[in-house]
Image 1: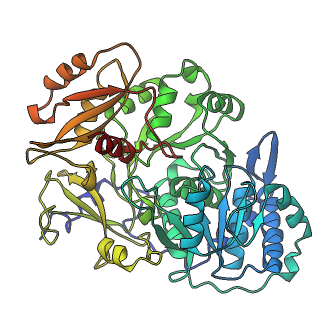
Image 2 (image 1 turned 180 degrees about the vertical axis):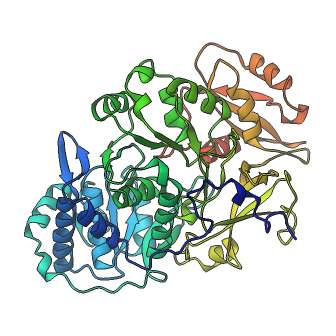
Image 3 (image 1 turned 60 degrees about the horizontal axis):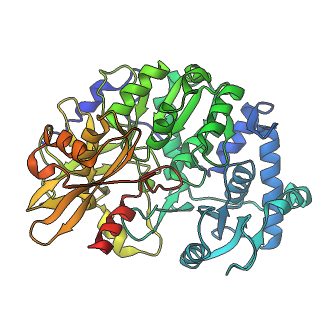
Length: 518
């Protein structure tokens, strides 16, 4: 029997978390219906000095749905939402869910070229955006017109819509494209609702429904912000404070004004907060639940942030294809800094050999992480080849390299596609980055492979420094702590690292930069 079949992680489940559960066969619109019933007069959103209650949010979504239906939006049609964080996003999202339409999330920072690709690939019918006119789409709805559409909509005209939760796609979520060509994961109502329930069960003792205040700097259009900041927050009756664009000073001001109790974010956001002079005095100690996701969190950052905030910083793991959360940190189990935690309810992990995917590896042996559970996507939109490669016998092959220890805790070593091969020896960028992060002069670091005519690749590090330091000093520092072939042979200093909208370092851009220069 394999070590994964035993599921050693179950012994570390918090006592309130069930190992398995049943999940709703309902449209995601039911989440808003429930919240409007349970938390009718509670604020759903606080934005730019005004609040919207859950009753008002549902009314606005229903009225917008009626106007969109009148304009021709039908069940199964694709509705693009290209908006920054703010009230219009959840209104448009739940309007689409009411009609059984499919939401296509689009980054507002996309160029016309990028938008045209998504529009053509997904077959958009309508787009909610603030982008100037002239785009190759059937219809544009500007935010200035949304209020008019809401006012004109009559909920009595809404059609009866029946959703097959397990089969009907609710969301086309395009992957960030940091490791290749962007493609759309098809996430069903069942996938997303299951992940909401999994998160709700996990945080039962950390969340008081109808009472929490969640500060959301993660974008709604990212799968992390979508599930945690929109769907789970609505299910829990949270008051969400959406921040349209990340700015550390605006974030500090929001901590002071709203005194949030929950704060999900990405590693780069925690790093910027850690180095801001006012973070420790802005009321951050009132936050009960800190979560980090979307990218690995350096151990050094976890320890420093916990010391500063006085609260536990939990790290989880997930991806677009897993509807967000696949594993996270239990509250009462022994603390394992650097682990991505253990699989959530009704979720299984296994790790297979990089050379032979039919063979499962042993304890502490690196291999490709595979995930199975109700939150796993239906497949990639119009891409059967990629779907067949990723989904095999019910397992999602993630492309991430991981290990499992004797307690069933998992650790991400690196991305399969991001391994560096130095004279045939494998180097995991994360291992080198972790060493660089421990140097007091290093604020951020990203390691890539630099083409080499003899060795194949050499290790190169891009560094954002917080104080003066030479590349020779950092190379010598790494040489004291790493095997020779893992030590960077070149270090390039940058004022900042390229990042996605959610704060994930775009390693691919740096890697391509090296390929171009070679």
